[in-house]
Image (cartoon, rainbow, N blue to C red):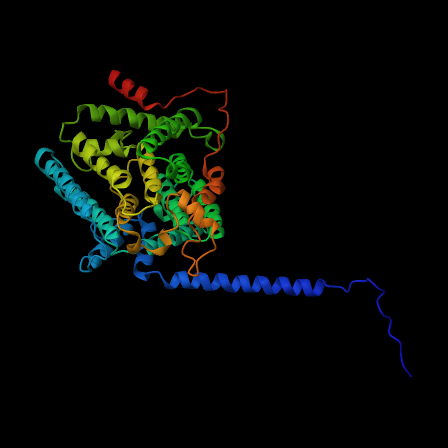
Length: 474
């Protein structure tokens, strides 16, 4: 007997949900497999020594018994000593000029400290050694003895580890819940998360990876509560977006506008929104600034000596909250002009041997210049050395740089025409026009929230010029 099976009516579609779900699962699985291969390939290209050295930098706030130096400084010292015997992979004529002048300036600072100022020899020598190690770090990055990409990825991993350790209760908490961890200082944590968060985002190749990196790094930076670092990070992103359209004069104007913008934000929105409870710390900072300018006004032309940039208040000593004035106090105005002038010239003025100028180091130097206005330990530190080394590395031709760096250059009309053409088989030009994509996602996420200041309570202005005038009258 033949059994008749019901057939679907004409035009009736069969269920396809199972097939669609299976297709989606296959695509997701393939995408995950591709991502895993990409990440594995990226990791395999890293120098593990430089990666773990970068990771060790997060312990810069933990002091060791070895010569009373922080763990991060010891890590840098070991790294540069190891690389002293390695040949330079790239060399630029300007390297010799830059580091000769800089080391002479540091030698002068040490000499005047020991010859003209009554200061403990051991402390002065230790300070000079730390600065010399930082300078050697910059030189070895410029010579490509240290793989900058591996170092930056190591620092990024370390900062993520610091974040997890802090909220897991393993890392130190010395600022009432503000993210510090092994960095051990709120402003230092802000500088590290701003600087290395920005550089990590700039070095990541894929746009979707950058979006994730921006979200993570800007979120962690916000948790440090460092207003100066938040502003510096935001202005660095703006520099990355706008500076490639400008010539040198235009960049100078943009830099001046940034300077005015930072001062305006500080004078009018220093305690807006989430920062409304900072009155006490701002008043303390104002007193430190007043005492700092009193010291600067009477310091000899040759400076007060290395390590003297400290203000006595309430039976305690506080470091200057201005890196420029720290240099002046330690070795005089000429010393400050030489050091700052060298780093600005190397980053913004020296010509890169390429048709498209890479602006990553310029944007990172914007962070250094802005942070130096309100933080005392920025110039001649590890973050400073990495930025200077990167700027000098970019003076070399394209073929002597990592392929990962080629996608972060200024955009020219030729690049836009190239971008409309089919991709090359190697995919080397895939990321030529990427800077606007990074910036448009990040500007609103990283800038400190701006709100109207409360009308209640006293109004304080922290304009540097008025503080200095008040200090001189007192």
